[in-house]
Image (tube, rainbow, N blue to C red):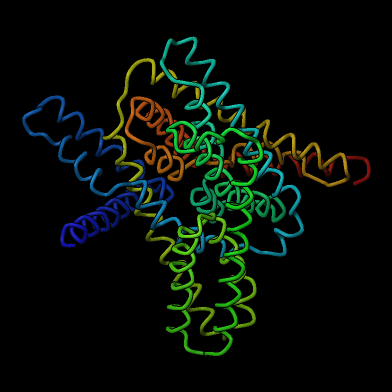
Length: 429
């Protein structure tokens, strides 16, 4: 217990110090600044370790990172709170009015992206002569295909996006990670031999997918509704905040026991409490305290998550071929994202749905990858294949957070402005 407290204290202290340095000097967005500073510190440690191996700085940092267990920390701890906090602020009516495009991108788009990326990586490893079976190429596709809701929602807080597009970006990011995790579980089960003799049968895969996804939806709605009914019977803001905490922790634990999607359950519960609970079951005072509490918790946990992402560089193994794979994977992932967005959008345009001209480009560049991808690859058994995937994943995630994250605002501003100019130039305007 003392060791856990010491590590937690060190992480929070570093988050505060790095956050202060970023605020005073770098002036980058908070979470991106934390990644950049933590990455720089990690590289300095690795450099000193190479120059003075006797100091064993790299070994010590790797030991600390191993004791934190990034995968379990995020997937079994932080993720439930972050998804609930993110969903709490999303307009359910805006999501419902765009349910078809969000649903198609979160399901068909994620599946399509998984196979496009997996196929592209397989062709790449064949040309490089890297020993990576096709199933692991598909696993990489499944863990990097979904956009990261934590990273995406963090960007949307500071970038002005038209409400219709914001709803699409936020809604897809909240749900496609659940879909991606289910696909990852299926493929990784096949890879490590836990899927059984019938793991590849389409009906078995479909059943597993439906149980995980629909089970998560039903669980989140059920526990969210029960909590909503209980919230209506009291008016004491401290107690009601504790009840929302109990909702998150209890629901995620139940999801784990029932083998249904915890992330999807968290999103559904958060949407219900954020749109129905805060409006019909809370007083104005309670609403302000609850939103304020979850906003603060969201900020703290985001700081911890992005700090850990920056430090994860100490655990990767970088070789020439794997570096090439990582660099080539960046445009490959963006191209797959473009296709997986363009097909659902084009399909819905055929049946009369309206989209702005820059929608596909905005959704493509706005599809950030983050900690969930790193956590998923770290959850694989320790094998040479995992080490390759970890390095490639980390390169793509760093590019996404730093390059896409820092350029999101100017890129979106330009695309939105160009779209507005095109609309005003049409004869019917």
